[in-house]
Length: 274
Ligand SMILES: O=C(O)CCC(=O)C(=O)O
Image 1: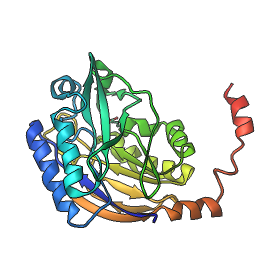
Image 2 (image 1 turned 45 degrees about the vertical axis):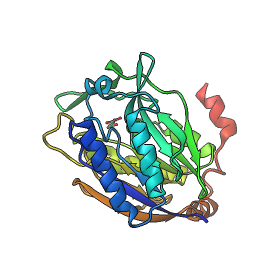
Image 3 (image 1 turned 90 degrees about the vertical axis):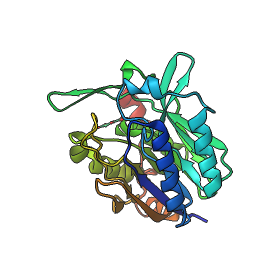
Image 4 (image 1 turned 180 degrees about the vertical axis):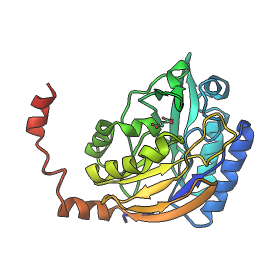
């Protein structure tokens, strides 16, 4: 069976970790009434997105938040792509997305590989590397529906990473993310469409809702794009939930009819890269 129902939770993030976890739990229970297979939370859904917050909110794997999320997956009988939270290991902190199966077992985790260090003059500045370290693994997890790639926000700007996930068998790429009011309107939709078209995969972004009182204002617009580049579902900027069923067989159909991946000249690309 290749049809799977995706649930997107575009939640508002406050500065209280416990309240954020409680809200995530309520929203996951609410969306689970529609019997989704995979539910996705946004990037940093329990920690307001600011470098200074990451060390304060960070927890080790198997900590309180991890167990809470594992339980949420089990109770609701869903795969949970648990957005991301700051993960502490030794003296390092990572922006980490855990994936739990229907039994609440962790089946994968992705540590953001590309740190968001930008300075768009008078508009948007951010320096994740002030407090975060980068992961170094390409992440694809297996389900009964097929393989699914996972990366976090700024990671998705790097086409090489999506291609690596697709080469490992991904038929959809899930991206907990939080673009802002400068880069969101300019790049969000184009990026999700481009990665979908180039790789002939479903691309799925899940953002926090917009909060004008926050120091980093998220763009919102969580969405699902088809392997042919069509936006299938999209939220606006407000807190909201949505489910949408995708059929991974459609990936094979698009790849058969327009055999881009097959037509690659890998023999030449290597020598051009050098
Ligand atoms: O790439 C962008 O424009 C936003 C990236 C970001 O906010 C993030 O990586 O968390």
